[in-house]
Image (cartoon, rainbow, N blue to C red; front, side, top):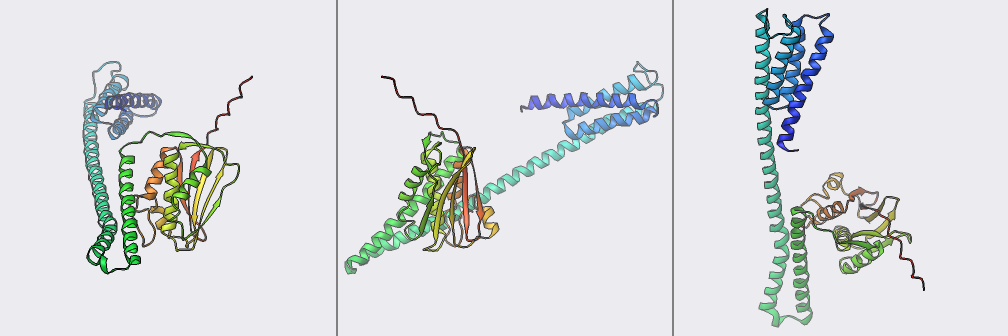
Length: 355
């Protein structure tokens, strides 16, 4: 809401509060002295002063003074005051409105400043985490590449062909790892900078899973991959490239952080409103605290083999961009990460043309 709209609402609340106080005063006047009715107006002024800015609060005070004077202070219907004590009451109402609204404005300013400091502190912690991740996670593959290339350059002639091939393989694999981690950092930056346009079209979970598994054949080679997809899964309308990346990130995360030889299960199911996809591994359930942090930036990795920690954060951003939801569930044998995408009915195939 704009500041002018918010200000207008404050004045409307001030008028409403004084109107309510006036109605209460009429209900009370048969049994209470006018001074007690003045307390009702004072209460209305205090409520507005606590709720809104100084302008609405002073408006409420002035309206309360006028209403109380005209309607309840003898002689009624005029602004004359027979008893000077009422002048003191009027002054108190105005002073209370001024003081409380000033205190509220001061507290709000301090709260805003504190919020700004906390935001700066969070941003600084995030920058520190990013620098720490880059320092550790990006330097590691660089160090391996540097060591392998240095060995090839200085001792290449003395090495066997198998040793040279092994060093070349290390360089190739670490270069790929470095590229993947930098790509995740850049993609998370793009996702946070603004929602990209979705290139949505109809596709199937089977097709996306097949493509993701094919691309991860090397990473999943030392795991038993179990695929459980029912035959009647509906088509979904998604950005196939992005959702395939979600599947790949989940599968890679499961393979990276579980022992060799353990199974990784990929499954899906459908309800009337959504399609749920699940990637489950079986290394033993992680601590509950780890589960709560899985989708946070720099927290979405498990165990000692930590990466930049953006894979699951990227998954969450992509799923939310599609109007879906993602969560993790500890199981008896490991961890299941699931995401749900809204189900929309695919258009009917076109009728064949009559001949």
